[in-house]
Amino acid sequence: MENTSLGWSGILRIGLVQAALGAIVVLTTSTMNRLMVVELALPAAVPGALVGLHYAMQILRPRLGFGSDVGGRRTPWIIGGMGILAIGGIVAALAIALMGSFRYAGIAVAVLAFILIGIGVGAAGTSLLVLLAKRVDERKRPAAATVVWLMMICGFVLTTIIVGACLDPYSPARLVTISAIVGAVAMIITLLAVRNIEGSAKQSANDPAQLTASHRPSTPAREQSAVEAKPASFMTALAEVWAEPKSRRFTIFVFVSMLAYSAQDLILEPFAGAVFGFTPGQSTRLSSALHGGALVGMVMVALACSGIRGRRFGSLPGWTIGGCVASALALLGLVAVGTAGPILPLKPLVFALGIANGSFAVAAIGSMMSFASSGRESREGVRMGMWGAAQALAFGIGGFLGAAASDLARHFLGVDGPAYAIVFAAESAMFLLAAVLASRLDQNRVSVPAVIPAPLGQPAT
Image (cartoon, rainbow, N blue to C red; front, side, top):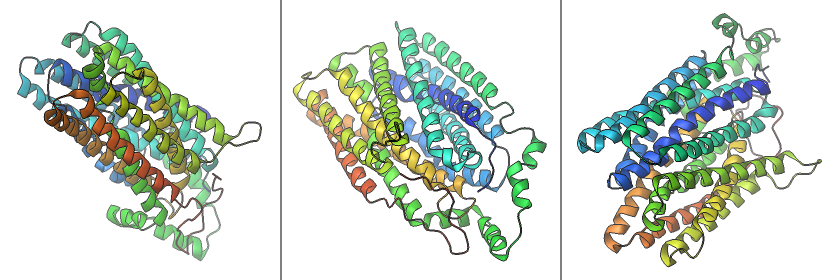
């Protein structure tokens, strides 16, 4: 196993970048979505299509991961991606302000903004994951993924709380100002966090891990493995990774579970505004309750699986399955309040949904980091790029279908509550399907070509 250069301080620095990335993204997927639907009275399919466009741009993630595998520095991609993302967030706010007077011109500007957002997230996010996979010791990868994911959720929570407090009373100028401040702060954090994290260009070219590998005794098996580890093209690498049973099964699970997760993202705040009469600030704070619950669920799983006084409470597969089932049950609670009225308080119900979502998400991320090295060598970037593309595709489709389905249901039913309840019920069914798929993931079986030795130190789940 190759030596790595990132310790816990480096992992925390990557987590700060992920938190900064999440701070910008959450404004576009929650607050700006609600403003387009409620304040501007646009069909929910409009923000759904825009968010779907930004996820569609992330189909480039496997190619970006391949480029990082082949060689080259990751920090320029991280900085460049965050810069593009920050600009996209500001342009999106300007587009919403423009929509108030010039609707179609504003929508056209929003299309450009969400293309920039998608490219920025894909470039920065993929490079962050590759940096974790390639430069963090294998034994630390599950914990590192948990820390980075938790810090991203913290970015969600802090941003929604602060923006929720500053946005009322709402005005387009206030939204643009807040978006500019968030983008600037995110960029400053990124620049400080990645400074010298890879060393100089000369040091990267003489990476200790590469130098160590170059002084290992050469054997015919190692030479053959090294040759096969470097494909001639991206399509060759992608085909090789897809041929691995574990990678393929996990890709399908990620797609289905994220499809269920994303369908709620764009309709939760409009649901709160239309059915419960929440103001923009109140519905933004409701999103903070969702993300706060996810934070609690992630910490709970991290503590349970890492062991308390030498005891572990469950496994990553068990928590993945349980989180999916709990998410389905929480969504059924939203179905109940959508059809029968406010028989249950909305905020605690959303908080419980967040806990369930966080439990399955962090357990799945822990498995992802463990699976990243299962298979051919030097394919971590391609594997995580493929899983990232599956997640992005699911989010794009799920967000659009959830928003469009709510529009159609409201058109035919003529009432808001039951219309949203239909969408929540469909999400619940998808989470149950994801639980079934998770139960069929073979954690112990690793598909590795005979000439390549199995990865060392495979973490137990």
